[in-house]
Image 1 (cartoon, helix red, strand yellow):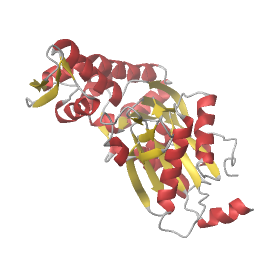
Image 2 (cartoon, one colour; image 1 turned 30 degrees about the horizontal axis):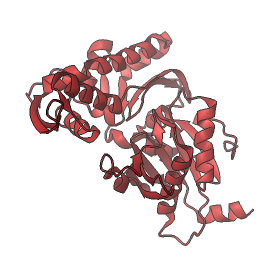
Image 3 (cartoon, rainbow, N blue to C red; image 1 turned 135 degrees about the horizontal axis):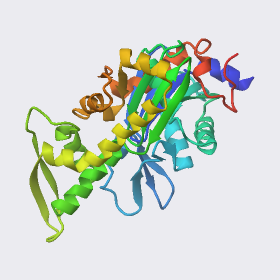
Length: 350
């Protein structure tokens, strides 16, 4: 009864709980939080020092007793308590301008499509402990498809490729369910690591993760470009231990990430091969939809199109597709209840 009363004063929210970034959609207002999934913790006291944007600024720059880390790895909870603190921070941030002292919102939260029951429970428990009164789970690819305004409840094949920070989720959706899918632990973070490994092995340069990501964004590509791009790569020389700058080009970076990109393309092919012929016909006429930050890698859509012989489209604002989808589900829970994963808490609306 007390929870229901607090619920009436709370704002229902949709969360895209990503490995790299967390986005929060508030019912009736849209996406109001878009921050890195990073938490800075004082290891001596266990105190949370910063969350989100402030914590990301600390990555790689903290003294030994402070760690700025991501509580999610490959799309799943790796540090339960820190994830709970991060979720509580975002829930409280949503309600800071209201008169709700103890917010108890309903929460729709996106998860990778092939995580285990234990991992699902970890997400549910962390969200409940963070202050939610009801938690509804939805596969991220399903939320992305809904956020991209695809007709997921119709008897039509919809293919979505969601490339985030920790995972690439590939799925074919029809009649409100996932027909065939595959989750790869190869996405934005793996491409950053490929660039770090290339710099170390080929250029004898030690790079930071942030530098590798900046280079990927500025000159990274999956397909031959019409233009020749260059960027400075700054790090520490392995031999001398001193700072060093090397100018690298788009061809070098494309070669550095080529294996991971090929694995993603092969994952798309595997899902297509496991899809019934009738749905393949739909996908061929409608094309493959790409969402997530990784879909912005130059030429990745062209490469998938070339390899699969199916047209590929990157949606407008691919970074927010999952959060938008969670928001649409929130706004229309009764009609979209079939796309949700049954939960131990707050059963799917009747």
